[in-house]
Image (cartoon, rainbow, N blue to C red):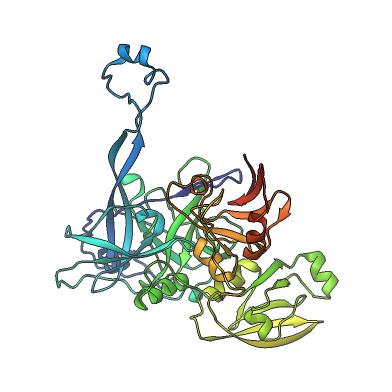
Length: 475
């Protein structure tokens, strides 16, 4: 379960749904204040059959405890074969089960859930609310958005499904339902309102753009749908803020537009991840002080502070210092919203971006493109020496995307492979950015090669590993 600490814990909910049979009553979904008999039962009957349990199993491998005296020739005779202890090199395997929930969005068995529900699973099984069970395979996991797609082997059976609906149709105050299995008590439907839209001050996934609701969401709801009053799925429940672990009325759902982009990528044949439009931009939120300095009437948009040479924004005429205020008629309030809006544009399509320059509103047409190979990655694998078995490459947008490097300012060379039993492969990891060698900055693979030609009895290497600067000394 993931957590985030801002005086609160972010609880990632893993949920399943159990069968439920609603009593037949002559009720209608509430549509106006004049309704006398108010009930969500018709809506629940429409959507609940499409919400499923997801059971996963995975094998956890842990090393057995090695007593410090076990390998000592003298003390070894006193241990013998003690249960739970190891003489070294042995591991213990344990099969772990987990549950989650999902929602079927097509009759042929396409299921949406969270990536954290199925990540690392060896087997996945889907159970419908009517008790039918089907094996399922993970077709696509998109970790940046925490959206995963499963394909169910239906044996030709048509499955009940719910329809996706644009979350853009929502307004703060609209009624919504959340369906899940909190704490394993069984299928539970909770109601609430949309508490907020475009929430981006979180640290849940790479896009940080969510629908906020006060419908009770507890551990056990992740992967389940957030449903509008017409039965459309407008989001996938993914997290809550809580001090106690229970719901306090602050839950978050991934907007349906992001879910649709993952569905489209899977339909297009993507298997390892979703390639989204690359902007090649560094930006910052417009504060009150920045707005005043730019002559804006109020803080809005995102200020461009840096542009990559190959950025499609630069090619469209946007410059450092411009303030992006809209994308395809959607208001842009901060960098997270800009990133989210562009991520939902298909590659090859043109996005209309509105921006401010010296107080004047302008518009640019930006073609959505994938991360480019610029500069060339120029991979290099030393055959001998400290780096034997390690492959390095220049950092470019394509390499950064493949390795999950989110730092837009990252430059230099990065380890793309570290295999075998060589000395280098035991020291370095895939994704390590080599900053310097013996106080010589490593700016590209060419400078890396030149450094390795120098005779060095002691080598001092500075690397950036996951944002942490580390120093390695090798004799």
